[in-house]
Length: 246
Image (tube, rainbow, N blue to C red; front, side):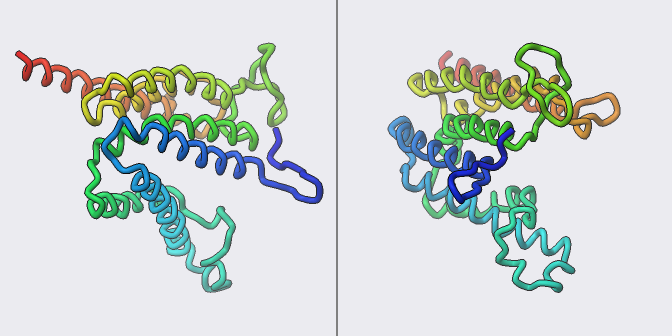
């Protein structure tokens, strides 16, 4: 893998750089598709920045709340640039409240916002999985197939690249759906359904033993639940529309 890019005297963290490029391109896609939605593209972009900034700030405080001794030993930890000192899960969850407050202030339609982020999010995931490939994370099971890669002492399925290839047709399907003007919220639900199906299929090749609890792959199980819920919502929405037409 290539976790570090050496450019002259500079040593750049490749995964972080790939993520930043992914965020930029996703924002470009967000602005390009804005014509399909009622939401203001500037508000949509600002919402992302508000959410990401809130995630970092809240995640840092959440981490220090869990491990106060670190702050006591070095108070400057609170402004450290070390991403390992951020509880991203807590930040991502708690920042949802701030994002909702921002949306209410800007009078943004919740379903329209979700729809508008569907394609850009899938585009970002391509760069996310490339970043995982760069760092060697999200590794696949051992394999002797011709396209296997050398990683962590053996040849493995390039699971990260499987996800990249799987996302491409999903993005094409979602871009086509942009033109069909689905009911508000359905574009987002459909994107989650397709992504969940992809995870159900591909996570079989996941080589991380931490995903196995008992006899179950918890990632696949969560994806199955998500897929069933999304299909239920889509079917119930179509039934409701049909009843209104009749």
